[in-house]
Amino acid sequence: MADAQISDTLADETGFTGHSVTAQDGLALYVREYGTHNERALPLVCLPGLSRNSADFQELATALATDARAPRRVVTIDARGRGRSDYDRDPENYAFPVELADVLAVLTAREIGRAVVLGTSRGGVLAMLLGAARPGALAGVILNDIGPVIEPKGLMRLRGYVGKLPTPSSFQDGAEILRRLGDAQFPKFDRASWLSQARRTWKMTGRGLVPDYDEKLATTLTSLDLERPLPALWAPFDSLAKIPLMVVHGANSDILSGATVAAMRARRTDIDVLEVADQGHAPLLAEPDVIGRIAAFITFCDVTALGF
Image (cartoon, rainbow, N blue to C red):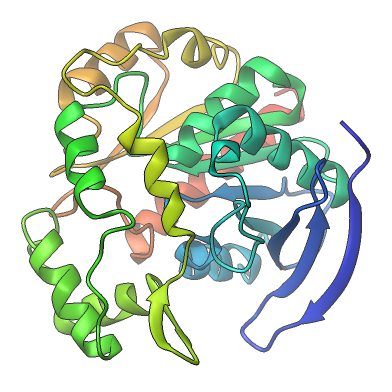
């Protein structure tokens, strides 16, 4: 893998700085950075889900970066084909080996040694793969509603709408589309919550609202045979055996089951498990109590990294 290069650093007015990192194949990856380096606090690197982007971590990243007691640097990544990162001309490159190399390129370019890595859904799979590929880079891992066993029912639901969403006439219309799709998993969301999600799902262009991701990402799901059990990821999960681990589980999730959480706990009795009530796949990580639990876990990782 060629050394990643940094280009076109952009100032932003919403509490973070945007950076463009060149991946190993020349594609530009967009990265948000909150806060600054703190020798006493590990950086947090956030990896979003399949069709999501770095904006999903806005509330969490802002809270951690501005914590008066332990401010820390937070880096959130738009994977290729999502958000402000370049779209890949070859959809075959929307694959775990390529996206893992992209994460490593960002770590190198942004001079991140050891970090706590938080991965939502697909981002959590990448975190587990990172444990196998470069365990020394991990000072802790947070898996947001993902585990070694992925429920086919949830993947079928995702396959039904990724790359297939109706085109909304407005963000308010988009909020209603998302409500109809997700109300069963997030029954306590109000209209403002759905509107916030709509603004992170679509973007305004000269031709109106379009998804904030490459719709060719759907190929990552259409190629799966969901009539057969998917290969379990216990080997990547076990690569985290010596790394502090937290699992956030949406109580209504159809991707991460309670049985899988129990099996993970059986293999790792020291897992910090947080179940988020009234949320499904994937928890937003935006509520003060959830942010507090995550902050406490990362502080534990700070202490563990010092050898205590």
